[in-house]
Length: 87
Length: 375
Image 1 (tube, rainbow over the protein chains, first blue to last red):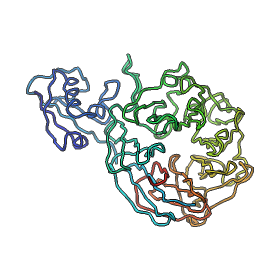
Image 2: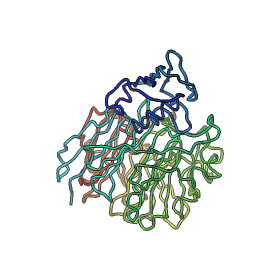
Image 3: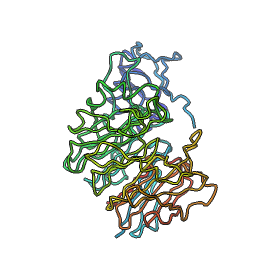
Image 4: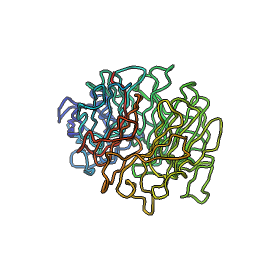
């Protein structure tokens, strides 16, 4: 299982939870699993061309990634953040 | 006679609904809904009273659509919001930034909705707005790259900004874009042809091209869908079908006011009457009320002449900007007019523009105002 940190912008999908679990061997698989559990969440973060949206940031541990194919190992932590996006 | 009305207000920071009494004098406010979300358009379904569709995004999150079946009390998110098909070259592939315009389908097609997006594209839903399909007839048209050049746009991105379905024929449609002007389809969106004859594009080498115009807004004359009003980046126009050539009726506007603006409204029953809200289009395009004196202008002779209506508006230092979705009318008799400003003020006229009063202030930047009967 992967631990996933949910930013405030997305807690309406997770019933208020800021930490949830997901399964998947890649970032994309984990996001797909999240979307099954919390329908609609993935499209708010990833566009229809599988690109991370401009004002969203993904980290695996301390490493930022915009590559959805990045492998994940059990015990990894996937963090989703809303970047700064103006007032 | 007048009937209770609700105003569906989309702002840069959430949605509000204002509901009136039968005289349209007193207004009750309901909101905010989705505080902090950018609400581009909030539209009732005239075929299903109580059903609303809302286009939303946020500064961070991707665009989505919400549907309410209880007039805004509860909302359900679309399972598949408008999105382009997956492309082979992800670097240059299109993704929907936001849905700008929501249009209920023809009365004979319950559940059908159309959506216009930025970048300019057309989407269709057949299940009441819960899932959406890309309309290949426009989005994959061989001319698409010419119709949507990469450098074109508005401050909020290039737009497919209106969709109009002929009330007599669901296969007959018009769309307006900020990059290529107006298009017509006679085969239910499978093919499109430009419809811009005599419409100026003074920002292009050929000022009267086949396409390339910036059509800010198109509207049927409700009592005669063969009459189309257009507020363009370059003036006010009228087209009477089956004619092909737009007439620049804005030439009859006072010279010191000009004929620049975002929206044009047709009277619900009188085909010769329309309203515009002029904005300053001189020099660097301030896009505020000319001279700081807000006014609507009405024609009652199909654009041969215009009269100023400003009673109740600030007499000076009123620098209103009214975006293209934020000026609307109801279908009452007399009809009510409503406008929302980027400064968060909501104004109403219950007497066809003769007099105006502010019914709300201090809202966030208003993007859209839609008037509808209370369900």
